[in-house]
Image (cartoon, rainbow, N blue to C red):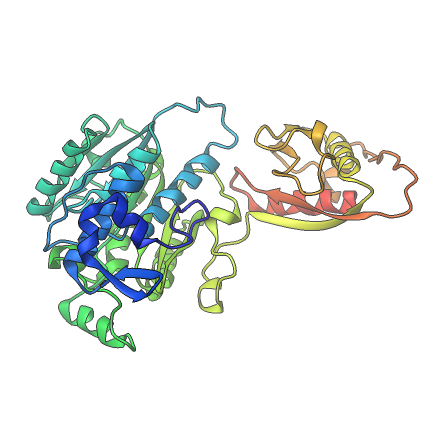
Length: 429
């Protein structure tokens, strides 16, 4: 579960029922000190979602009995991941922190939970959302209006012949920062039944979704394939295209789709809520690169590890007398390189207080901009050889172990990034 998810430590149902009284009648006691609800009770599920949105986000929501009841912790994970993507995408930009972020929710559903959550967390975010089912469209509109978000969430009606990324076709001059989607998982009713039977102890919770929400021809990977194909012509009009995935097998299929269309700038993450595991994929036609903490599944199992793209974050252990000495050494190495520009990382820690404690709250480092290779042996042969002089280290009998971390933030030539990391690491050592 995402580190900022307020439900990381679980839900205290007794406290929640105090904040939302209608939940009380659904509580069941598992021990003297612990209460929960019956997750196979549809009404209890809906009441839980209503309670969490009411208490934690001050949202009023109407949930339909014959439409999906969205689990809040899982949906919140997706929104928090998007927050990280937007923040990291603007890392090297000069931008107003209050500038508007424009998002798309493909198939917002009867609840419209994604834009409601996102607009509650981020006051500068606006959405254009689509919905194909008339019943869900009407209820989503109700929820948007009930929370007075009509000026920030625009909902458009799609149909069977509409593009999946309909909002991008409505106004071709408009640019979006991201799209999000929770596509129908299954390819048929038989697929739904087989999925339920495959669970050893049966499903943990009852599924309340309608056929239009759960089933699409070819399943979720085919749905995302269509999205990828549409994005090929739209390209940079949306900075990041993303979608949730409900099956591990879909991760491999979607990555293959991206690679077959020569899309190498893609990202993967994993959402975990209790025993439920979901994945999300994103891709971009820009040269913005995201750190591994956002773009790769950490500690992934071998099944999924082979589908992760190459690292954008590289860590190199080094020895130095102190953090300050290491900072000065790296600065000296960077100063020796021609045709590059660098400055202190404005998102990092102030270098002046780097020795206050041994574990900094944030990294101390640099933003480096290089248009070409000026550091490799072949590049240096083409110019006057430069000597790198390290600052004299104070006479201290021992050194400490530190980590120099390189993160690729922007560019299209991975070899340039890898070469730069190798060169600087070697000089610092």
